[in-house]
Length: 397
Image (cartoon, rainbow, N blue to C red):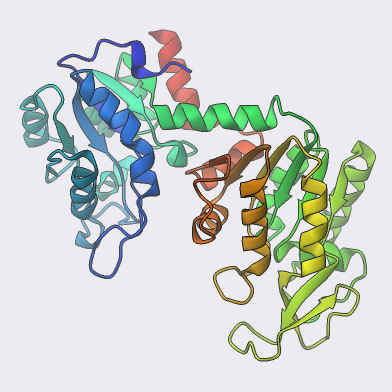
């Protein structure tokens, strides 16, 4: 994928779409800046090449209205502290006043547009709004992998009106690691899939059966598979309307020679709020008044023994309710194990990435994706609209 690296950016207005949809603390400060830090190489690289850097993002779900709760002011301030340079926030993202502010930039200077989603036209991919955004750009750079599965104006539509388009370092890195892990992996390839529901990952599981050697299933979604096999699951979260789906997936995996591993034991309790009765039991002996909230220690050891033999591991979705101790242990144990495993590990999805950070091993694992929905859609084999539009613009240019 073409990056901005070989472009002449001196004095050019460079519109950089980033994803700074980051969590804010109660006092309005950025509480997790992973996505901001991930974009720094691109932003700094453009600035060093003399580009006039126009930073564009959304924050939250203002639904096309100006909502001060979702102003990008604290994000601009945080970015400024990381860059060591001022990053003024303009009051809008389109219009004559914004165009004047952008025109007033000098090479190497930065400016941030106000929340793109204060305009409903952004999510509608409105051509007129796309053209207004393009009026701010000589060069368009997409460095927002996490929203590249959305056909929005700043991700998709704008590329029709800017002649010169390129990928940022972060987007290029996301695509490269993904292809390395799933299109040309070092084998065996293990896919670890967790999370709450089978229904949200049917497409992922179906697509990955043609790629994986091992499929490891955890989280609440494993309960549906266990029930399919006749195992008691007590009061656990189960998608009864997807029992047949789970059975079909297990049959398809068997036909394709993909080995599927489900939990052999579990950590159970009567509820998340009453943890005094926490027990570890085999999956054949889940009490009827209990619910499965984490994988057990034997399951963790089984998963480890499988992953030790692998050349590539892709992980999406936690193994338990990791936000609530003591049901974090299985997910944290997997994160810590992968951090020490000498193989390519690619971790994607908001919960998995958060678990890796909370476990303190973010810097030790192979690669942590900044995308949740985008990562999942790529795992389903889908083409991301933002990436497709960028590639089409590059072909035209």
